[in-house]
Length: 553
Image (cartoon, rainbow, N blue to C red; front, side, top):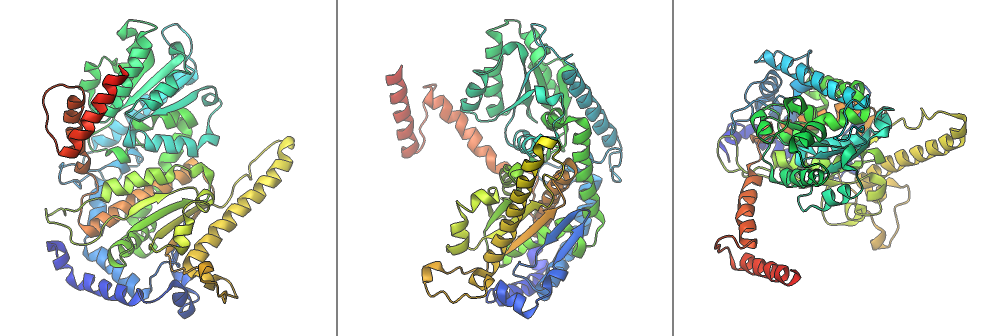
């Protein structure tokens, strides 16, 4: 046991005993013993409704989980997070993504200047958006911008890309004349496919990198600059008219030649996967307008306040986090899937994969000790109706235990306007009803298996559904900037809750650095620059690639 777990041996022991008892019980048995459990295992907050009655949990286990949270220091940890104290020990930093959506309604921040800095950044973002919307931002030939390409990777790509897709219907009239593109892949596939359809004279690039050294981003950015210079050889003109840079390093943006007027800053205390609320969200602001971007921030701030003030038993992110720890660590369920029943949330699982697995994919505690229990589960997902025809077979009849999150907006298509759309509106309303019916039906079958139907006596074994897959259903009134902001903030705080109980740091990502460093050596070896000896497998692969490259040339 780690030192912290030893201090909490009674609480961990109580939960281990609860888990041993509940592993032998099914969700169906829990409902038979307690038919009204949904009244206790649910929460309603500001248009969200969280139902976790289908989790494999009872009152004794739930009470023990809440006790563990308190004794683990979660109340103090939450206060440190929102007030700007150091919560990232390996980098000695706060993690103040909550401040990005709080100004000027910030918590009692340790650094009072942060709110002012955030407000200044938002003001500059608004100015840039207005300039693009009014066609004052023009390319080297004097033509207005028609296409915007966001170049980033990880948090500089996944959050803006997911949100622009989810909130596309909130695009402003000015934004609808603009085409938004996203490039992240280092192999050049995306940038090549995008550039061959664009006009250099009317294309604006947003280059986003916290360090402004990310190799994936800069290979794409340098390709974009080379493409622009085929049309105009003056790099200063290109930088002034066709590049916006977003980084925590103004020195590096200056060195790359980006004018200060085209620079947007964020801060070292903004983690990449928590950064879409900062200037990294510029593509979102362009897509949906600053008013809607601010509504996104307001929704997240509302969830932040709820997280910081609500009792644990009525605290949505805390409940989500406790269930995550319960399933992964105590029940040993090491796979988790996110299943939104709305096509607009198609890329939400990708976003949450980075958020959870990069944050909590750790095996060393904050005390430098080896973690001796299961932490972050493997997370994946897809739009629920598509997933039903893909991997639900494994969920229903496979051998793996998987916990599930079902997410759905209740209201959809209720604001479709125009006489010509009356028939379509009726049909679309039926489709929304169908989606919600499938969402509820699938969670029911995953929980109860064949017990979900009155006559479950089918003797054909290959048609049996074992059930007992735990799930949570999260409903929101509708999908708007405010509701999406709150949803994403809830998942961010879920990650923090789990990390606090596991005593790990969710705000660093040292696990991705070694591969990057070795890649530099490997790239040099592939290019024949120097003599490198790796392992026999890698050496053979390098020789194979070099031979093919020589044949092609």
